[in-house]
Length: 324
Ligand code: SF4
Image 1 (spheres, protein in one colour):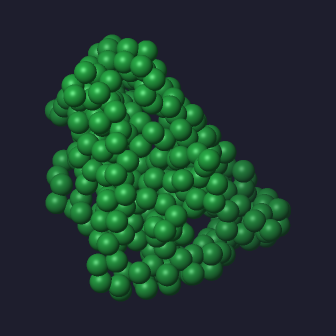
Image 2 (cartoon, helix red, strand yellow):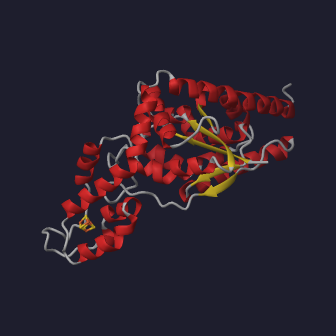
Image 3 (cartoon, protein in one colour):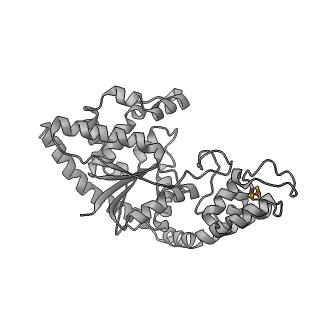
């Protein structure tokens, strides 16, 4: 029997190449070997969002990117977290077996509390419980994660284990499927590529927009003039060439070190590589966006299928807990 993968992403709108290289391409690959459930976690987004007016549009844009990148609604369940409300019921039930100390010691909670001291809401503390509910509601046994998310998954495993110990075996303990992809650094050359830091390149950008964005990228600060020898190993443009011009990285590095190429032409070459790689994606995305109601239909079908699994799990959980 195929294992079951669950992964959720905050609906941040149009996805960027960091999202693609770090997660989406892996989502697409996993469809071959697993039963996959992929979710736009809109309730999680409420813990940090100041406003919700763009939430629905952000979900649509993210789903268009996922679908155009190769997520297949025939193979995978694609849906929106809040469209299957049993997850909130399970969140409440799991909260009864989760010691508060487990939640307040979570590093990301402390960090978020520091970043938004005016809005340390209950949802922020309960975030790992909701994340556990997301996974175990669908009895997923496999969760693709980056190294930085391992502590969260370990907490989900502890909560599932504690429920099983208290009420009897109900949930599989989800296993991490470590992605070996490094975090993609953004155009500022320092931080992980992120929409909120505005250091990103959108997958769905036009070729012109892509070129303009790349021209803003930080390079080797030692290169004030074209005649200055460069240090490609500290330049993020060079790192991005590894993804989009992999056969030319050695040549680019040698030319950079020998001051035989300028940063502008180097960036132009990167833009060409990215635009060539993304051309089929962009065409497919435009076709999908032109189909009225397509995304809505995919999400409605996904919610219906997810609902079927969720209803069965909630019934079992309530029986175990003596509620029915
Ligand atoms: Fe970076 Fe290319 Fe400029 Fe070298 S030539 S510093 S690799 S942008």
